[in-house]
Image (cartoon, rainbow, N blue to C red):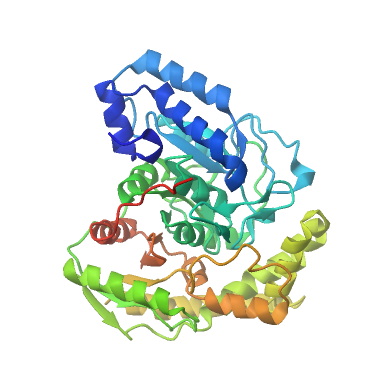
Amino acid sequence: MLAPESATISEIQDAVATGALTRREVVARHLERIEAHNGAINGFVELRSDEVLAEADAADAAHGRTIAGPLDGVPFSVKDSYSVAGLRRTDGLPVNKDNVQDTDELTVRRLRDAGALILGHAAIPDLCIRWNTVSGLYGTTVNPRDRTRTAGGSSGGDAANVAAGFATVGIGGDLGGSIRVPASFCGVYGFRPGAGRVAEFNPNHVPEDGISHEVMCETGPLARSVRDIQITYDVIQGHHERDPASVPAGSRPTREPGRVAVLRHETGAVLDPVIERSLDHVAEILTAEGYVVEEQVLPDLSRAPDVWAQIIGTELIRDYLPVIGDKVIDSGRVHIEEMFGAYETGSDVSAYLAAWRERRALQDTLLAAMEDHPLVIAPVAGMPAPPLDFDHHIGREASVALLDRMRCVPWVNLFSLPGLALPNGIQIVGRRFAENEVLAAGFAAERHLPRVDIAPL
């Protein structure tokens, strides 16, 4: 049996079921690794060590070798922006450092009900608006596979924790690549379901997010295997009465391998050669698995990243920053101003609404193409994990150039689609409610990719 810190969900549960390990031993091994190495990585920013050990003891006493739920005995990392009872929910801001939560929010409760053992909160950047995890409260999170490189963002702490062997699975959120970017930078899998698939309800506060959050943001898992992604997704998905935008659990039936479109430069993305080679490799893998993979069958999507930046940028510049900008770390505030300031539509409401109308027209064009090609493979970022300071005070021109390298990311959010990031920097994207088709293609790709091992620390 593998060491528990590098094991999958099924391997951990097999070890518990055979008596090779107790749940307490699984948790203790993870906490020992965190204690030894988290100071250098900064993946976890808050731990509940005593509590989770007590919960593991209680589960061992109650269930022994019987596996009592799909996540029974599995150590989890949860993004700081999700409420966990007894932990702070800070959005990375020093002003929120005393914001201790009374109860779990819905996703965390669903995890616990399935037997998950919550280790603690993972690092995020201020306001979760950055492809780098740098926080005014918690500092910088580095990539466990190369500490001179970023872990990505905004779910960079969870990606780092999974890659480092600090947690089996992480829970993140994705408004503009915040699961898929750090997963690809840290060499793990990351899954963003389609909009509405994972209900959001937090009894600790009144919802304040706007329509763009409901349309473009979704909660999802990061893990070292597609099976662990699917197991976790099956637990957290589903409707809740307090989230009117959520939809019932379920998916389109999984079909035999079908037609797959390759998205390469249709968004105007600038791609490094190593990323293009990874895209070619995934195309070859899916072809070998029986899929029909075709290039140059998608429409022009060059406006999609700009429209995403117009909508999100206008909300950030015109709504968020005037209220909370002085609470955000300088490099984070300047990053928002430099990148999104180049796209925001100004104070004219009609220009903002025009961006939403353009979104709908672009979406219709893409979905027509996806009737013939229900799956799309594309890069996530246009480059491998960059240096830690890649977005620090770089100026507006360089910020726009950075978005050009990330243009294969936000179209997925703009159109509310599900997407699975592979450890090699490529993603598989499907139509609404086709999460099972995306994951089936992910299983096919995984059969040809190396097993994701934890980083040597």
